[in-house]
Amino acid sequence: MSNGGANFRIIRDERAADPGPARKLLRSDDPQITGLVGLDMYVTEGDLKIPDDGALMMIGNTEELTRACEGATSQMIGRIATASRLPLIVHFVRMQITGWPRNQNDTLIVIGSQTYWDNVGSGPSAKWTELDVRVTSLSLYYNTSQNSLPGWIQSIKDNYGDPTVDKEGRPL
Image (tube, rainbow, N blue to C red; front, top):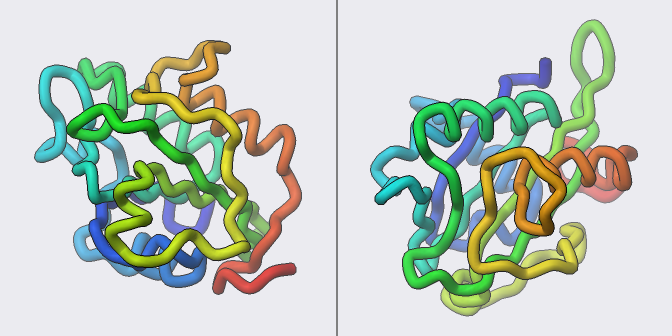
């Protein structure tokens, strides 16, 4: 278990530009949204639709994040897309979280279109890693296609397992 489980939020401001403030926002929300199903006000016809000028933020360990995708598909939510199906850009960091009884590494992910970054007036900080693939929708089903969010979450752990920032967003 991570420190706090998985948390999710859709935002339209610059708080996703840096991992530290993004994590603080996700961990201090009251009430916290602990699953993609909790974002039901953004669900239309089986898609979780991010506003074109917004971004979906999520944090948790690999198991928690993939379990959230499974929970969404069990509720007939199958994809993530922007309202106008703009190409999605996925940024992530692996965060070192000190926890008991052992240290934990969480993955913090921000998904949005270039319109989001243009709207907030700044790009993501250099601390973020950007996935090379841009797609108009992300599948919440676990498979090997290039648009499977659970597949990407597992790939991030497998290929970027070591944390790149601490829980405050400072580079390690």
